Amino acid sequence: MKKIVIHITSPDQQAIVSSYSQMLASMQINILNLEQHVERDDSLFFMRISAEAKHDFRVSSLEESLDTINKQFNASSSIYDIDKRLNLAILVTHESLPLYDILIKHKTHEIKSNLRVIISNHDTLRSIGNQFNINFKLIDINSDKDKGNKQLESILEEETIDLLVLARYMQIVPSQIVKKYKGKIINIHHGFLPAFKGGNPYRQAWERGVKIIGATAHYVTKDLDEGPIISQDVIPITHHHSIEEMIASGRNLERNVLVNAIKAHLEYRVIIHGKRTIIFNK
Image (cartoon, rainbow, N blue to C red; front, side):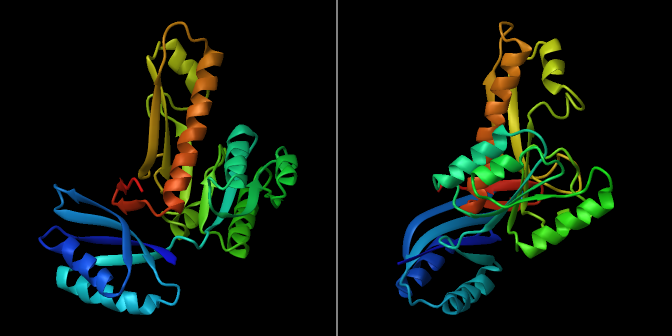
């Protein structure tokens, strides 16, 4: 059986679920899971359908059937092959733990993708790429930003990258790449933004006596650190925590949140709605 995911967005109205469900049943496509959400303020309906079809089914036939119902409800739909693995690139600088975490989860198939390349503006983490037998490419951003970013764009094109993950990559991705890969670049940062911008955010937080720290994974847009949020988490902090303990806890949180965001994207559980995201559970 062939597993597929269908995303549907429509103005909210009656009979949407039954109409699409009946159409899939008529094509002998079995629904495994169906989740829906209504954005009340916008009167918009969102639905994710996970389904199984016979191996010989034709995507074009499903597209035609979907198009008929889409016109009826003024809806849009997308079909995804859940077994087709997306090409993934990871951007890093010096910090090794986020990279290790992704590579280990990729090796154990928790992250299901074709991990094509690790890209960095420093050579520090090349040995980790070698350890996991992943191609490592150095870009010359430090001495020439324009040259380095052109190298980056060229690598992404050569490797036909579908998803770009910034695993503590300490450079700004240029606007032309952000535009080209809209909704396909994921970044992670500490959850103090915008309260604690700049260097040493954990020290700033410690000095202010915060009682909670967090992490946020989001899509990258032209507005720095303001893209649609995919995953967030927090942990409590007390006056007993040292700066070092806060940093360790925060870094662990960041890695978990980043992996959750990557998995949500790869499993087609995310629909972007303006500056917001609809995140489905399965």
